[in-house]
Amino acid sequence: MADVARAHGGDGGNRPPRKDLRKVPSRCDSSIPKVTRGRGCNKKLMDKFEKNGNKPLDLQVAFVGKHGKFVGENQSSFIRFISTSIWNEFPMYYQGWDSVPPTYKYQLWDELYHYFDLASHTIEKDHWIKVEAIINRECHRAYTERKSELKTHFDFIDGRDNTKLAKLCPPSDFNEDRWIELIDKLFSDKKYLNRCEANKRNRQKHHYVSCHGSQSYTQKRWMQTKNKEETSYIEGFEDTRKKDGEWVNEAARLDFE
Image 1 (tube, one colour):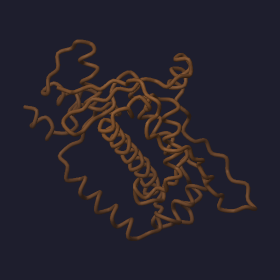
Image 2: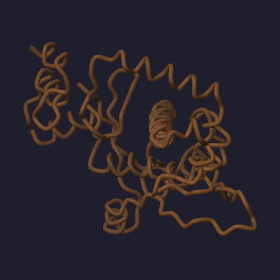
Image 3: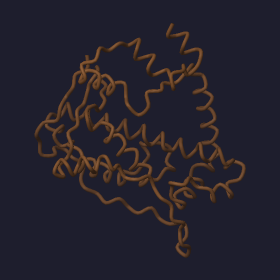
Image 4: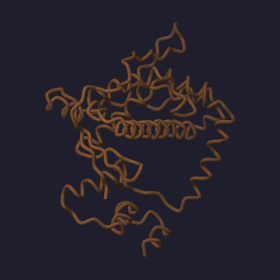
C-alpha cells in the first residue's frame, strides 16, 4: 500500500533563496541568431493555476518504503513543467544533473514554488528531505532524457562524422546557439561519445521496455484507487508491455504467460 502524504499549511521552510537565471551567451555578438521556437509552456498548467486564483496547486506524494513519487491531479503538470523548463532554459552540455550550476537550479525551484504548493511540504523536516530527493530525481531524469533526445538527433544527422554540418541542423524546437554550444562542449568529446555507445549496448541487453508513457506506476495506481478500480499486478504488466494492443516483443508475451 502506498502511503500518500497530502500538502499541509506552511510558510516556505527551508525554501532555496531566490536567484536570477543567468542568460545563455550567444556564440557570436556580430551575428543575428536564428529564431527557433522552444517547447511551449504548459497551457493546461496555466489554466489550472488561473482557475485556482493564481495560488500554488496542491501536490501529493506517495511513499513506498524509502522511495516516493508525486501523484494526484497535478502530477503530470508538475513533471511536464520540469521537463519543459530544462529543455528551454538549461545548458545541456554538462555530464549530468549534479554538474549543472546551482544558478539554474535556483531559478527552477523558484518557479516550482510559484506554481505548486511545495512550501506546505517543508513543515516536517524528515518529510521535506524525502520530497526534496524526489524532486531532484525527477530533475535528473528529465535532464538525462532531454539530453538523450538531442544526442539521438545528433546521431541521426551523422554529427560525429561531420560536426560542421551538424551545427547547421539543430532540432526544430531547440535554440541554434545552444545547439552549437552543446556540440562544441559535449558532443565533440570522444570520451563522452564512447561512453554513450557503451550505454547503448547495455540498454540493448534489456529484454523489453515499458509502455506506460509519462504516467508513473505510482500515479496509475493512485488513479485506479481514486476511481475505485480493482488493481492487479498481472494486468498492470500486460497494460504496460503492449503498444496498440500488441506485445512489445515475444519475450514480454512469454514472461506474461
